[in-house]
Image (cartoon, rainbow, N blue to C red):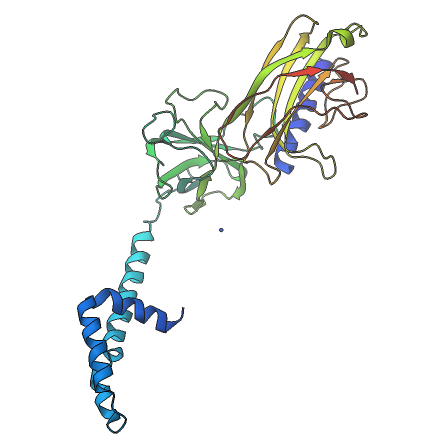
Length: 357
C-alpha cells in the first residue's frame, strides 16, 4: 500500500473512533376496593343503617356493621396473587449455548429491541421482524477500516421483535478465546445481508465488548437492538466564486454527522462517510449518503460537516489547516443543522464548501 492509501486508512480510523467516545395510603385503597366490590344500592343502605344505629347510649351496635374486617383479607389475597402471576410471566427459560469445538468459546442470550424508533406491524419494512445476523469480531468494527471479517457468526431466522416485550434467543459457537466485540443486525426489509449496514435495519450499537476464555460458555449476554439505521443524504457543491480562487480541487471528501458545533467537550460523531479521490468543480454537485449508527445524544441535533482534504493529509476528527470546509469560523457561518430525536430518520441536507480552514 502506498503512503497515500495508508494515510487514508489511518485518517478514517481515527475519524470513526470518535463514534465510540463520543429507567396511598391504606384507607384510600380500601375505599376504592369497597366501591368496586359493593353495589351502590348496598353502600347507600349500609350508610343508612350506620346513621340510624349510631346512638350515644349504645355504641356497641356500631360494631356489627363495620365492613373493614371482611374486606381487608380479601384485598390482600388478591394483591398477592397478582404479584405472583406477574413474576411467573416475566421469567424466561435459560438459553442453551454449549461450547462447540474444544478450546473455543460460546456466547448466547436474549435479544430485544429498543423503543426509540418507528415500528409498524402493518409495514413489512418497519415491523422489526426478519432474520438477525449476530457477528463476533476480534477488533472493534466501528473503528477499524477496512471493515474486519467476523471471527464467528450466528443466524436467528424469522425473528419477531415487533412488540417491546418480544424476545428471541441467540447462540454463537466456535468463538476464538480473547477479547471480542458483539454486533447484532436485523434485516427488517428482507433485502438480505451485505458487507455493510443498510438504511432501515436494526442494530446493536455501539458494539458490546467482552472477553472469553477457551471452553467458556456464556448464556446471559443479553443485547438490545437499540438503533434503526437512519441516513443523511444530499448534494455537496463548492461556491463558484470561492472555487475560482483555488488551484487544487482534487482530494478526499469526508462527511461527518456530529451532535454539536461545540468543540469542548468534543462532539460525538453519529456517522461518517468518505468519497475518495474526487475532483470537484463549480458547476457540478457531488451526491453523498451517511448512515446514522448511534442513538441521538442529549443535544437532539445533527450537524453536517463536510471536509475536502485536498492535500490528502488525512482527517483526525477535525479539519486540518488548508482543508476546504462548509462553514466559516469568523464571522460564524455554521454548517447545516437538523433535529435528531429518533433513530431511523431519512434526512435530506444539501451543503456548500465555502472556506479554507
